[in-house]
Image (cartoon, rainbow, N blue to C red; front, top):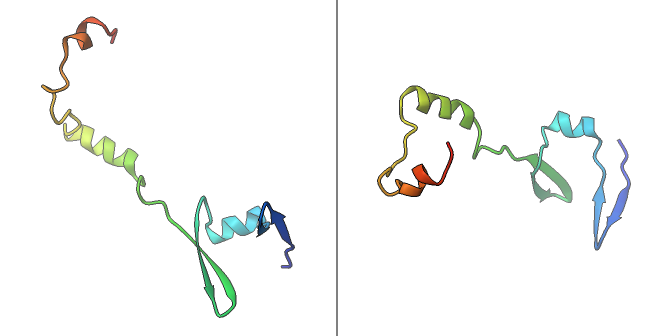
Length: 84
């Protein structure tokens, strides 16, 4: 597939078709490596929040989703000023 190099501000870029992005698994970020005069793009898996929803459900089922220091966060205005 032939692609044209385009100007983007002071940089240059290449438009990558959506189907190619999907086939390569590219989402928000990639690692870029130059190897033997060849540009290599590697997808980055965002693992920092992966499966958080599942983990939160597990915490709730195990009654482990409580405040770590409820005394420090227990203020009278929580009960008097806020409508829960």
